[in-house]
Picture 1: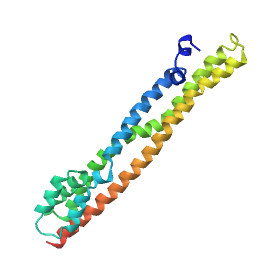
Picture 2 (picture 1 turned 180 degrees about the vertical axis):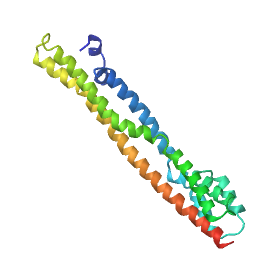
Picture 3 (picture 1 turned 90 degrees about the vertical axis):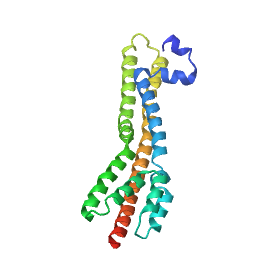
Picture 4 (picture 1 turned 135 degrees about the vertical axis):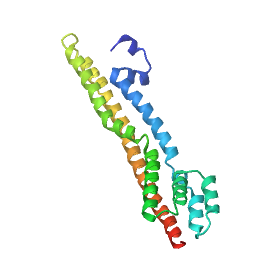
Amino acid sequence: MHPLIATLPGFVKFFAQGGFFMFVLLVLSVFSLAVILQRARVIKMDRALPPEVINALRAYKGGGTESLQRVLREEPSPLSLILENVIQHRDWPRAEILEAVQTRARHEISRLESGLVFLEITTGISPLLGLLGTLSGLVGIFGNIGNHGDPQLVANGISEALNCTIVGLAVAVPNLVAYNYFTRRVEVVAIEFESLTTDLMTKFSLNR
């Protein structure tokens, strides 16, 4: 162990012993946390699917759309934008309305999924980076066995090298949980988009 590292506090020493790969894992963990917090704020059910908009849609019986559009403007959300798209094209043939709405819905879903690919990539590479850090440390340890034949020093070195693997798994596990959770939430939102837009299109068709 480097003499400078030995003087560091225990928590800092744990990461300092991991070397370059530990630093990369720490950077990934910071960015991952930022993405998780940002997606948690954006992919909220009441943010993507405001109850006020849903209630206004269910109360709408056809005819003029002024009251419904007023609610959509007052409650900006992905659902509001999609429903506004339906209203703007309500005089088109149903097939063309459906195509326009699907294009808008895909755009909104893509915005909701923004950043999730980073969590997916981080989940896959973090354990590998941890393993690389461990193997790099082990190579250095075994290369110096001839100079430091003390078994205790070797054991301590192996223990320090394994820190990278621990951190790699510690970064990957919450990212995997968050990725699956957000992906499932986006799927639920997409199903609700389809159901609610179909409901509005049906009401327009019945009142033609």
